[in-house]
Amino acid sequence: MQQTVRQETFPVFVLKFGREETTLQSVDAICAYFRARIEAHPCAVFIAEFDHFAHTSALGEGRIGEGIRAAKNVVYCFGIALPEPEVLAVRPRSIGIAEIEDGFLVTFMEAPMPVANGIVEDWARGLCDLEPRQPSPEFRADTL
Image 1 (cartoon, rainbow, N blue to C red):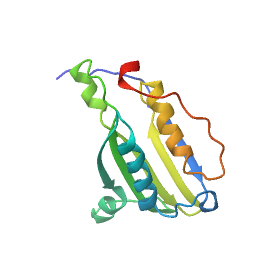
Image 2: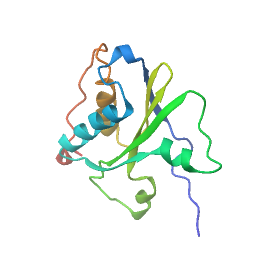
Image 3: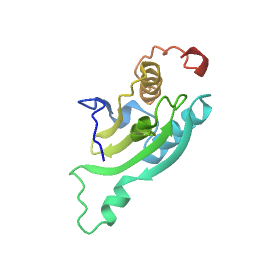
Image 4: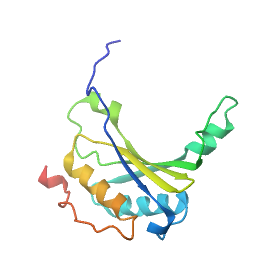
């Protein structure tokens, strides 16, 4: 087996917001919001929702950080190209949604496709009813 390094670090986007900044008041509601955005996008596909909190809670040795009340991942893919089989190691992607004591935390790992990052950033910012948004450029398979 051969080991390769694709990137030295894994940059993560993080959006933390309070309950008063959004009309969505649960992790399930936020997951549904992201699923709707993914399903409405012409190049994205919704794959699954994973309840990380439930999984970790069910493990005998599972540990959940203090203050985390709920945690799920919305798994999706923008995979419009498959240039080499090694790319499969970093796909699909997920958006993490955690409920914490003072609100919510949304996280996702930076993708090597800046336009896709911009779209997911827009989706995340859309959760905050009070934050002004600048739309990202349209992301279409025929523009890459």
